[in-house]
Length: 123
Image (cartoon, rainbow, N blue to C red; front, side, top):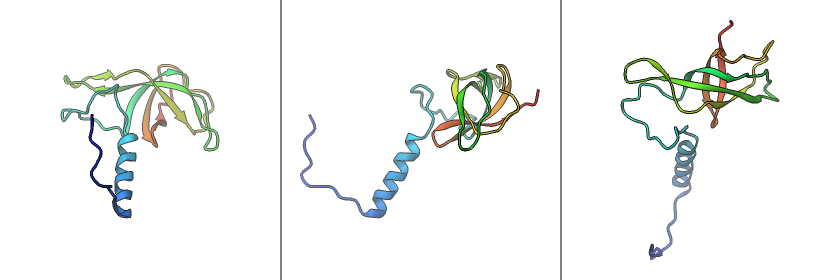
């Protein structure tokens, strides 16, 4: 059982803003089902390679699609590209002439706590 503090704790306004910013940054960091990042990891969450597992429909800035899913791939210890975790939901605000089909290679970006379609192969 934790003991109550002996006195109130207060933060200055700049310190409270720094704490809030740090907490938001941590909470928006993508997680791989409880795994902690390793120093051996050679990838970042900025932009990743992926393959469509559920067709990704067209979208717009005002109405992005969220029905698509993709399997993210990272390099493994042997240097080969391997599936990582379960397929993730993909947000798309790009106007497409047709949905991106299953099996299509795409690039995803981590924006505001969600995976967004950045680019896709043409064929």
